Image (cartoon, rainbow, N blue to C red; front, side):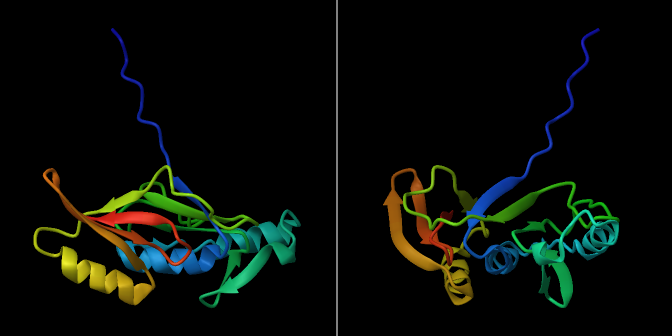
Length: 154
């Protein structure tokens, strides 16, 4: 009898100049939660496994200086580390700015008849409209997050 392999756990990783600002934007855009890694960071600091300069204060808690993730609020997470075990987007600091079109992007589906209101809400959070697309296959709005990463609202 052949056993079906377990699904592969994954997270989407996005390069960012300011990972914490990106996490705030995307947490609000997706109605996700920013992961709270404070307990893990405190343990790592106590063990000497993490230098203090690798941390920042973020939302009145300790966070990693160069990475932060957002997770779906209904998905499980590890209480000891704050790390999500389901749908996650991780933002990691990189030194270079975005220079070309994304090869991978998110499509947001706010629901029937809600695209215009969602585009307005996202613009209020700091996104910008790049173009509106109307094709025989459908209509959507191409937007950019505060660091220029493209995404679509259907």
